Length: 53
Image (cartoon, rainbow, N blue to C red; front, side):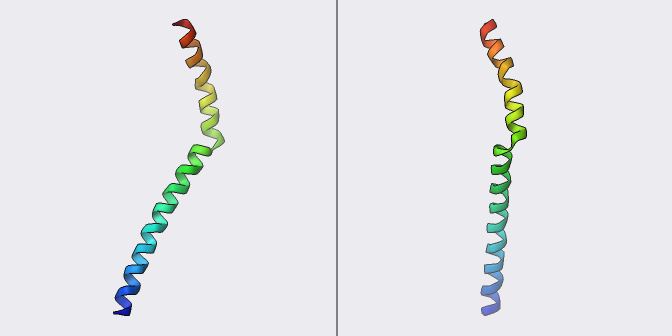
């Protein structure tokens, strides 16, 4: 009984850790300077395209 409970808790903990890791990875990706640099490179092109009409 106790072993079963422990193994299910361990499995739940592993799943939670996996979700947390994915969430943290996504957060760091979206907050990363590399993405901001990409956004800055694409922004002027979009503005120029808008002006050109």
